Amino acid sequence: MKTAYTAALSMLAGIAVGAVAIEGLHAQSTPKAYVVSEIEVLDQGAQNAYLPKVTELIKSSGGTFLARGGNIFAVEGEAPKRVTIAVYDSFAKAQAARTSPEWKALAPERNKAIKVRSFITEGLPN
Image (cartoon, rainbow, N blue to C red):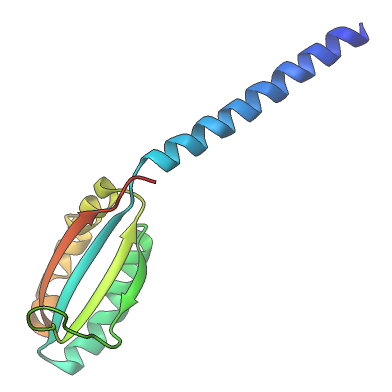
């Protein structure tokens, strides 16, 4: 009887380890996506009111900031006034976040506060 319990426990442990390994491999195969935004502030007061809202929206949709403002050095062409880079777990998640009704609802505030050019680029596979 003890052998049957040992065999059953070993099988369950093997299944659990296999499931974790498969999930890890799946996570590694999906490249991250990066949202790069070039920003020019049009109205600093409107920008100050907009920032907390857009920050919360990006975080709640799974995004994390990698760069937000800071020094910019132009290597080729002209440097934008300000740059932000946010990372998402996948291209689809980044695209969904940036085309969501919540993102579109912020458009009037965004247009008053900033002039922006944004794009999503897929990272290299892990």
